[in-house]
Every structure is written in structure tokens, then in C-alpha cells.
Image (cartoon, rainbow over the protein chains, first blue to last red):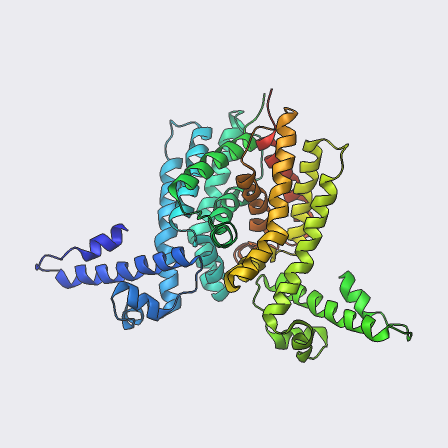
Length: 222
Length: 222
């Protein structure tokens, strides 16, 4: 929502105004696409809805991103860069014990999927529809750093007798699976049980449940 | 694969032959659709590919199922009925302790998603594209029995001091999330890391990992 508010703020008429406005329109398109995916619980969006909701001409998609696929890639970039940076920052805290790092990381995964519940589906979609070079770029830029971070974190915890020795790659699926599956089940909960998963109360309950579960699964019991 | 082999077996020329052949063609369409979804890691299938792979005229889809959506519903029925029956049979074993029931159930979930990795996406797709009555039917027939079984199993375990008191609905997401997320990540593993998740070796490793993790998360520690 920050992006929308920023973009709506009048830009001061000084040098660089056009650059500021352009950045605003580009960010606004991404923020609106993100909102549409989040509300509709899917990654298929129509340019006419995007134009209607953002108030911007859909030709701007071509101008900023080349085409719709380019815009989806830019949205994945926006969302994944935030995650990779947050994991890097957590890993760099030398004084923090591994179990506290992991606890915080799991909490943030739940919060991330609450904010951008379409993230995993967007990633799958772009990997499927991209050529080999682009799939490789996505893997190198977003997936490899996370894999490396998990490997480092788990071996640090094992070395300190805090964690059981678990496979970091399988563990990655345990964490993202728990986060992704909950919020991507939104439609089922809404249509079948009249519930909405995207409430802060349910997010908080699920965050606590998931941190408890995954920590119990990895902690070494002396 | 059983269905494909059955359908390929020549039917003896006795009374009821037509019914047998019809059942064979119907099952073969479903088995082929299932294979295409499993291999392609998606729930979008084309009728021309279905016809080519099954050797059957695609007009038979209209004959047996009305349309493609009807065929997708029949496939969901086929796959979900097997799960609900297996959970019912497990719950009916009065002599088995709750933790053993749960351990077996989690193992079976991994095996199920290995066999039909598209299952959750098919469920989501049908809930999204169906009207309210059909969504309700899907929920009543497949989701409610599982929810009720989880509630009974967890309260039995809590009453015997075997389980921590965890929320059965959140627990459902923990289990199916772990199963679904792994096999639906197949394309990412293949495109980005040159690995295939659909091997029996990786399935067995992930089954053991997941059973360990989830049991550690729910077992009460005295």
C-alpha cells in the first residue's frame, strides 16, 4: 500500500519531476497488479482490469515492461528481492542464535505470504513459461541465495547441538509449503466455509501454530 | 496405471460387453487426463492431447462427462473418494493408537501427492470455477469428512496425553501444505536444478522427513 500512497502524493515541480512521475506510474502498476492477484487469489490478471483499477492507460504496461509477461517478472523481482534481502540481513546477525534466526524467518514467511499470497504461484508460472536462460536467472537470483542461507543456518544449528541434522532442501519445502498452502487456500475457505484467511487474526494464529510446529520438528531434544 | 492396463485388456464377448467397454473408455480418459496433468505439472489439458494420448475420440469427453469441466470434476471425484475412504478406514481401526494413525495418514498423504501431484490445484480450480452449489457439494463430500476425521483424531490423542492440543483446521494446512508443496515444485526443481521430484527415492526421503517433522510438532513432550 505504501507504493500506492507514494504514487498518489503530488510530485514537487522541480528538476527530475518526470523521472519521479515515471517511477510512480511504474510502481503503481505493480502495486495494483499485486492487489488484484491478492484479492482474486490467482496470477491471471487482465490488462483492462489493471487499467481500470490503477487509473492508468494499459499502454503503459508496454512502455515500462514490454508486455504482460515483463510486468509479471518485474512483480516477482519486487517481491523476491525483499525476501532475499530480509534473509541476508537476518543471517548477518552474528550474535543471534540459530534457533532465534529460524524462528524469526518462519514468522516473516507467514507475514510475506499474507502480504503476497500469490508469490509461489507467480514463481511457478514464470518458471514454466520462461525459456531456459530466464529460468536459470530466476533460480540464481532468488532460489539459490535462499538455499545457501538454509544450508548455513541449519549447519550452524547442528554444530551448536541446537538442531537435528535435517536436509536443507527438504526443509525449504516444509517452510514455504506451510506458508504458501494456507493463504492459497483462501478461495476454498471462503466458498466452502464462509471464512476469509486474509484476516490479521487468522494470520497471527497461523503464524504461532507454524512457528511452534516447525521449531518442534527441527530442535534437537537432548 | 492400473486403469490403463485394465482398459487395454480385451473384454470377453459376453452380455454386458458394451457396459464393460464403456467403463473402460471412461476410465481410460480419466487415467490419461491424470497422467497428462502429472507429467505437465498443471491442470490445464487440451482435448486434442487427451485424444492423441488415449487413442480415443475427444467427442467421448462430451458423451461421458458433458464437457471438459465435467471430466475435471469426475477426476477430482475419482482421486478424492480414494482419500476419504482411506481416512475412514484408518479412523475405524479402534485398536490403533492415535499417533500411529497419524503417522500412517501423513505417509499416505505423501504417497497420494506423489501419485496425483495436481490434486490440490485441481480442487482449487474447480472451487473457483464452480457455482455456489457445486462448491458446497465439493466441500461437503471431500473437505468436511477430512476435517471431522482430523478433529476426532486430534481430540483422541489429546485425551490420551499423546498430542499437544493443536487446532485441527490449521493442522490440516500443515499436512496438506507439506505434501502438496513438494510435488507441485517439480518444475522449479527440474528447470532450475536439473532434478525431478517425481522419483521414488526422493518421495521416500521426503515422506520420512515429513512424518518426522509433523510428528515432532504434535507429540506432547512430558
